[in-house]
Length: 200
Length: 200
DNA sequence: ATAAACATACCGAACATTCTCTTTGTAGTG
DNA sequence: CACTACAAAGAGAATGTTCGGTATGTTTAT
Image 1 (cartoon, helix red, strand yellow):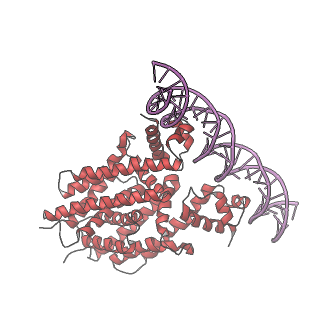
Image 2 (cartoon, protein in one colour):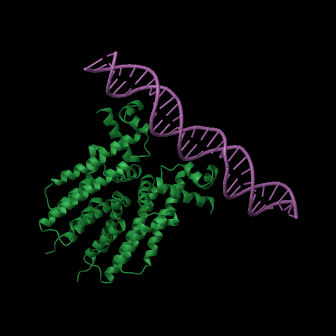
Image 3 (cartoon, chains in turn yellow, green, cyan, orange):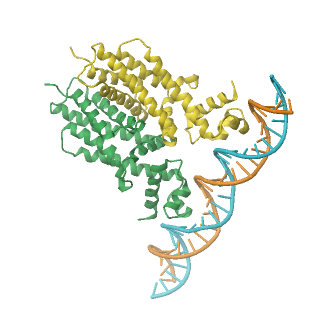
């Protein structure tokens, strides 16, 4: 593996454990088995590194996951579930960086730190949300076409409500980590589905 | 105003603008019109100060708001709305520190930074969530007693679903600040209500 | 009543440490 | 020779903290 990607992977691991500000450049350099010169050969600054890392290891992953689920076969409800469980549960296995699910909590917290510190990350975050929202809306529209989802509420409105519930599940779990995330996610999607489905 | 509370208020203002890590002790000391010695007379460390500030200005406020709404008169739906709008919109006026609503976004991000950095803050965060969850459940139980809310779903289950939707609205808005928060919150509570109310 | 003893609140220069980033040097390769 | 990819050393600024000192107020003893 080249020095650059070694630095990036190491950085992601460290950041996942300690956050942006609590991981120093010296630490990164040592853990990456390189030197200051080596580092500055590949990156202009610490910030530049962090931005690249976030972009590659978080947003790239999130957005390609959305793309993958787009071609996934199943009912609208199954699609929603798969989408969310993918983002929530599997993202921790990015490049096998960490085998433990626990880290997704940190990943979320770090993302928030990034949003607060760097406008660029805020922008990527926003793009991802729009991307996810579009996906949700597509799925709901599909359900409407198939006659499974009620038409009396605007699908865009339903998509927003769905997405807020789903993101809320994550945030709630960040605050109460003892809550079983997958279980909760599934049961909340059940409620959402019961609300939007057509009752016979 | 005493030196200690002056330091605390100034710190809260600064932290709200720049986050924990980006506000230095020198900055705090200068802005508080005191000196290094004066500071260390009242606080053992910078971290100790931050913890006290978060506890006083955020969690104290959140929890007393819940208490206030407990004695508020109105329908269950109105109570839910008032609760959330209070936390979301008015909390920015804590001790008239800041007149701008915009800051609530920062407040949330800072809270996340705190949760990530300090276990103590994570604990307070958790307590607040439980407190809020209990409140939500009380309100729903009240609605059930009044025959307004369906009984076929466990009220605890409904409370969790409600809270996740509501917190999701906040998180979604953090990612997409152009979204009108109050409006969104009200319309999401409408959906929730339509789901849990008894249809005639 | 007065002096001594102590406590509290605060000052500010000095401290050691850590941080990011620059500069200079060098081994390998085409 | 020139270029890439790194190594080594350290400059320079900023950080949180310590510590000796002062001014003011409050007990306590005589």
